[in-house]
Image (cartoon, rainbow, N blue to C red; front, side, top):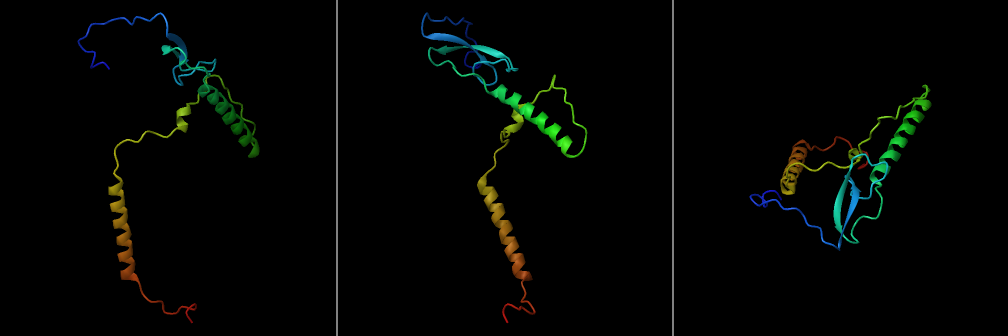
Length: 142
């Protein structure tokens, strides 16, 4: 966006009288913020009727995952005969991004993979043929 506006004078956005509404949303999920939202909020303009109506579940899931992790940690310590672990939850943050798959880096052609896999299979077959010998005795054939 910056490159297409380069060299143009700065102008303020003039909000129309009707048709636009502003809404404060969670910066992470884009939904209405709750008290659990820790990533900040943004105020954005929406066409009337398109603004979010549901509340952020992203950070509420973080809270439930945090409680689940603490419960499991305490339960596991009891199952191995240790004293219960007391966890200080103040300042404990769990990044829910650890549950998402990373973005692939780099381009990988499937045809290259197929070619190398097929060559590996051919090598194994050729290697097996050279080492293939008749068994001295096979009780199933007798």
